[in-house]
Length: 298
Image (cartoon, rainbow, N blue to C red; front, side, top):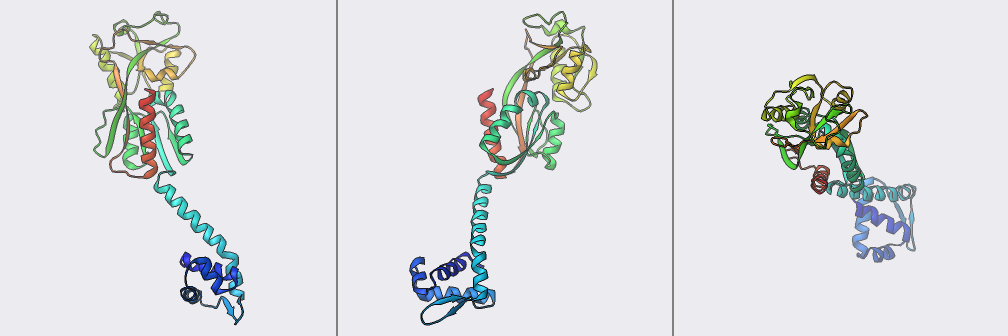
């Protein structure tokens, strides 16, 4: 049932006169009469009782008159919502965050996305290592990831948005805790709390490469998959660690962060990632806002 037929019906019903209704719609009286006959044919019953002086609604027309404003309003709402969906103003975006970014970047980024896209439903997944995010991006459980490259999945687009140094994570009572900075070599004899080796963690490899560049292989006391747990283990005295600078957004009693005095091989990239070819409007809006936010705040 076309909207112009319903609008023609409304005009005739309210004016109770074909001539006045035709003038209101800026069309001829004959085309208007044809529209009404077409609508009556589609519904299967007369909507008007025509006399020489006036036009009156039948019982069917009276009922339809009660329903048409709601129908037209619903059609307008649907068209409006469709335009907003096409522009990325409504929809759903699932975001994944690597461990350190969960604490330092996620709060401000999500606040901006909610402010700019209030009707887009955001699903947040924090403390996810890069391999887990890549798997979820490929199978559609995530739409956008904030992770540590490299990513070796051809289905995934990756864009580096910043590079950040590693920092030392120390127990508050450690001999180096009051130092302005820490030399990596000074940690050679320390037990390390690290990211998992079996999960192919990018940060595990970065920490290992940094230690080896300074003449030692880290002695691992514990491997953990979550940054919050890693810092908590350090605070409990299980060992020391190296982590991206963004981990400093996580405050846990008993753990302190110190910059490294020698940053050779001690930087890690942070990137946004999404499925190659995914053109979902809400994703594209969230992607561009995330890109701007991360470069601006970096």
